[in-house]
Amino acid sequence: MILATLYETLVAPFAEFAFMRRALVASVALALGSAPIGLLLVMRRMSLMGDAMSHAVLPGAAIGFMLAGLSLPAMSVGGFVAGVLVAALAGIATRYTSVREDASFAAFYLMSLAAGVLLVSVSGSNVDLMHILFGSVLAVDDAALLLVASVATVTLLTLAVIWRALLIECLDPVFLFSMRGHGPWWHQLFLLLVVLNLVAGFQALGTLMAVGLMMLPAISARLWARSVGGMLVAAVLIATASGVGGLLLSYHVELPSGPAIILLAGVIYLLSLLVGKQGGALPRYLRGRHLAE
Amino acid sequence: MKIILDNLTVSYRRHPAVHHASGTFAEGEATAIFGPNGAGKSTLLKTMIGALRPDEGAVHFDGGSLADIAYLPQQSEIDRSLPVTVTDLVATGLWRRTGAFGGVDAASLAKVSEALATVGLSGFASRTIDALSNGQFQRVLFARILVQDARLILLDEPFNAVDAKTTFDLLELVRRWKEEGRTVIAVLHDYEQVRAYFAQTLLLAREVVAWGATASVLTDDNLRRALDKVAVWHAHAPVCETAKEGA
Image 1: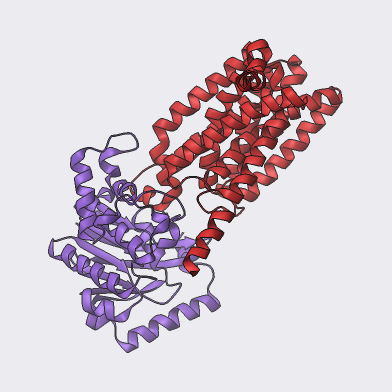
Image 2: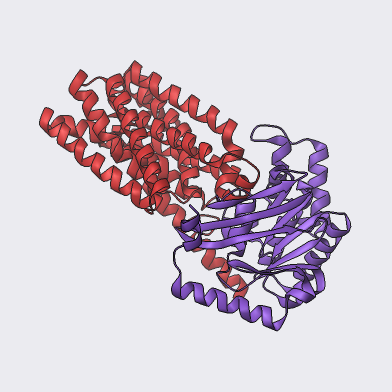
């Protein structure tokens, strides 16, 4: 009886509908790639960078849309190029002027966002804009699935190879420099991965929502784990759980899937703030009382 | 290996931080770099490791290269909130051998634990650095220098905000390095430390005020001149005039 209910609630939607299965694979693949990227952004104190980049992607996607209609490859390539361009321009501005990196990113992404909105509204209807901004994980086709899976694969393999350098660079950049460790290159490669993952999340979640699956699980992870490895596992688990749970939620309650996934990740974050083992409010309060006694 | 400063001028946004400095660091000796705040001490060290580019002049390594340097950054340059283990941090000192991709073998790991034992942190291998005190953290960084096993050791304010016992232990390590024939150059603020452990001193106030045996450098007269120079520079000369004429 209970088993039957559980099956109905948790498994049946995926077993019965192909579009739900696709959406499931897409969210798990996204979680695998995005969560570690988000964790690195948090550790590098660049939490808002993902947000900036997700906006930066928009005009490229819009140009792709204008040239080829609602074509995923065109919009993805366009988005990728725009993202990389903004990252490069911001990098150059930081390097050769006195503007700090975060400010220079903010400036370029805002320009990029405005250009994107302009392009979309000149060329299409508002429905199209909504589609680009918010995506639709339930309409993921084979091409999109392949893109998401490839990006997750490339991300995980690349991170595995450059993990040490990335970590040392955010831990102790001057030391890495003193060892001839080529610091800036690792950073550029990492930014490339950030853009790649945002573009991958684009069809499923939309440009604005993709960054949610990247950052929220990563920020929650710090409240559960005490080591970098532990945080990595926690972030991926939370992102996966948000993806699966969000899909089920959207299926049963008939909510749009993208926001459902991100809001669920948000709820997990709020819970983590309260009861997270490492520095959550409640454990902290209880530990404080022990010390006092 | 000798390090020679050859008419070295380094600017920070066109303001000269080190101004026409020339001289040679004594080989196999411990040299303290001493001077008022804003005298360009840290800038000089960063230029020596190549992190800052000189406007004029150069740093020469006679009989060695940049690869022979172990550098200790100021604590404030390091993000200590990351939950990286003590072992991992010390093992970053193996970078020249492992690079970004190479593995860390058992012999190297043994070196890491030996270094931790030397600085008195044997039981700390698997702790994370965000849980360490300033003193403990500085011991970890000294362990990393031990692992680097370099002929030239550069220390940027190694004893800032570090407790007295740790400072004493680490200064003994500096003494040992000198006995092993390594060259040690340290930016310091404490007069007594310099007198007790560093035979040579470079008194810096953007320019070289005095450079040589510590007793002959740290005179009241020199120290007063150093203070005056920094004050005058602050007041009157924001842009390097001499360099402009030379260019």
